[in-house]
Image 1 (cartoon, one colour):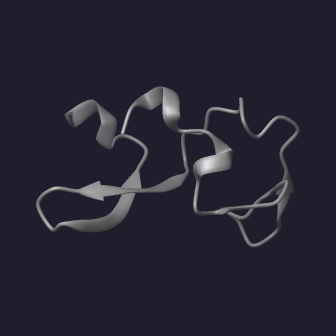
Image 2 (image 1 turned 180 degrees about the vertical axis):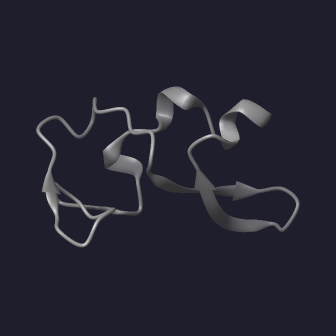
Amino acid sequence: MKKSEMHCTSCIKFDGNDCRLDPKPVQIENPSEFWCSQGQWSCWSERYQEMEPFYWGEWEQE
């Protein structure tokens, strides 16, 4: 996953207009443009041949 793809709209913790990383939902104004440093995304794993969680910071290893 590319760092530029890590926006709220593709994060599995995003629900409608709300970020749910914390117990209290936080409304995000521009979710398609907001770059997140704490999110969790789902991406394809060649190793396991299935979707797996992808966390911020892993992009540095690719």
